[in-house]
Every structure is written in C-alpha cells, then in structure tokens.
Amino acid sequence: MTVDYHVHLEEGPYSFRWLERTSRALRHFHGNDEGVHHRSWIQTSHSLLSDRLEKGPYSAEWLDLYLKKAKERNLKEVGIVDHLYRFVETRDYFEHHMDLSDTELGRKQHRWLNQVMTERMADFVRFIESQKEKWANEGIVLKLGMEADFFPGCHDQLKALLDAYNWDYVIGSVHFIDGWGFDNPDAIDQFERYDLDALYARFFGIVEEAIRSNLFDFVAHLDNLKVFNFRPDERTLLPHYEKIAKALVETNTATEVNAGLFYRYPIKEMCPSDTFLTILANAGVKFTTSSDSHFPDDIGMYIGENTEKLRKLGIDQITTF
Image (cartoon, rainbow, N blue to C red; front, side, top):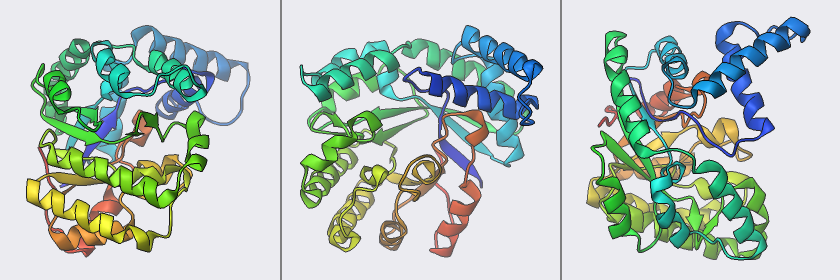
C-alpha cells in the first residue's frame, strides 16, 4: 500500500520566498506556469495567491490540491501533520527549551518563533476532521497527526500538550540540540562551533531519548542533523545507528523513509541514509513512508521509489496508524 504520513499544510517564516513557492504550487494546479511571464500571467498569479492568503492554511480549497495530487500519485492513506511550534498554546514549551537568549542565535530564534507560531491547535484539528469524509469518498484515508519536537527532559510537559486532542498518530522529531535549531539556515554558522563527532553523539542521544519516551508512534528523519552536509565519516556513526535500531525495536516504535532532505535541502539524501536504512531493516525496525511535503505539488514525492527500496531490503509491510 502506498502511504504518505508526513505532510504539512503550511510552514513559515512568511517571506517573499514563501510567497513565491506558494504561488508556484498554485500555478502547478491552475495551469498558469507556461513560462511566458506577461501581464495576464502575473495578474492571474496575483489573484490565486491573494485568495490563498485570504483563506489561510486551513481552507478546503488548499487541502483539495493535496487530494488531487494524492490521487494522481495513487496514495491510499495520507497523514496531515503540523509542527507543534505552529501553535500559540505551545509557547511556554518552546520558550523553556529553545535558546531565546539575548545573543545573536537567541535573537534569531526568537524572531523565527514569533514568525511561525501563528495558529491554534483546535482550528487545525477541527479542519482536518471535517475533511476526512471527503477524502474517503475519493478513495483515500485521511489521518490527523502532530509532529512534536522532543527536547531532553520534556516528557511530562510534552505529554500534557499532546493529550489535549485525540490524534490518529504522533510523530516525534529532533530539530534542536541544546536549544539550537540546527536545520534553520539562518543559524548554520553554529556547526562550525562543534566537534562533529561529539555533536552527532549528542544528537543521537536525544533521538534515543525521544524513542524511549514512548510518546510517539514513529520518530521522523532519524539523521536529519546532516541537513547542510556537516557529517563526519559515516563509518564513525555506525555504533549510533545500531543503538537507535535497538531502541526502536525494544519500544516497538516505527520510523520513516523521509524524502524531504533529498529534494529540498543541500544534503540531497534520504533520511535515513542507505547505510543507516540497511542497519535498521536488518534489526527488524518497522517503517512508514513520507514525502515531508510542505506544499501540495510535493505530496507523495519519492514514495514509490522508497517503497521499492524497502522491498529490496526484505521489508514487505508498510506500517500504518
């Protein structure tokens, strides 16, 4: 079965780059991307984008584009998630765990948090639940999920936030090391301050803690620290890979093959890497498949290829929730 359990409706920060990417997605579906950028082309693009902005992230018209592309790519189940940091109810959680100090990094991250934390969780839940019947009528199961950032020692506070709603599944993810959001391109200079071997050891320690927290149905993009191509010789990471595989099996926690870094980031590699994936598969870890799309034209990206990759490793079942 072809599934995509890691799909986002929107993501900040809201910038002209975000506007351009949103406009490109809209043109993909509305046949207005012929490459001849005359006056009528920009007028139509402006109209589409204005309508999108007016209706906001939780509009049926926007989600319908995901449905259309999901059908084109023959997906049978789709899980829509949002990052926990998108919701104003989680401000205390992130302010407690992120570096928001009066430093260059802290000021950048404080500005970023204010730019992305714009929505209310109840609106997201209500909207996705309202669309499930429509998707079912089109032959696709729609699931409601949450992608929750894990920080060391956060268990009780995070559990309380997640327990507020009945999610179909919850994804755990690690995007921060000691308060630093390492996948933020505005903070890429922080990599130069670390010994990479020590940094990866710290990262995988947090990933293992997330797995063993038993808060998550699956833990996402297990090696996304490599996002900007900062990685030691991968042979030195093999003990970490083995340790993560052991934790996943012992806790009966799944993971994913995530295409996001492959088509959206400098590393141009799936998560996990082929070496990591083989270790996980040999250990008996359970997998689902994910595009990590943030726009409707990307839903289902490389799902078929990654499903086939799993099949070649002897994985004959995709985990669903």
